[in-house]
Length: 210
Image (cartoon, rainbow, N blue to C red; front, side):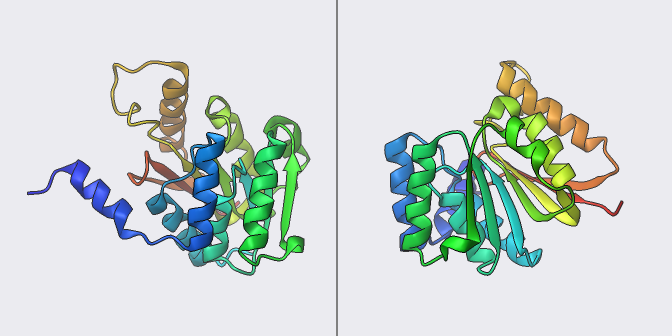
């Protein structure tokens, strides 16, 4: 019987990434960005497609890997992406243009999420991706749930944080923050939630009607 690690590796290697995503992933490595895993990206694409997403907001642009996966599932969507690092966004902009995504369908905002998100319109997005500073994950998810429309989905990669969340011995601030988030979400009747073990965890929160 295969062990969990081999099954996880099989799921990751099952995914075929486009040349554009492979190039963006290479740029992410050069910039020291922890991009979503291939299997995580594929799930982002599936959720964007299943949601028929036309308006997406991403907290954490990186070099464009997650954005390209979201466009793979929702090729006609408009993406708003927020990041504190302008040189990361420059790499992402190039990745989107190389992939043939029209510039008017990508809005890149440079700034801190806690400064930018309060100005965004609530209930206006089909998909919200939260993949920025892990120390701010609870605050960013709270904003994400405000911004997403009923029936839309908030996605949180790294929700099992380096496979540390399941280990009660691990009590660093980031691990504890994710653990607290999962506990609070589990008690909420405002969303339907699940965790996929792809990458180091993908939390999916679909917002129920108001």
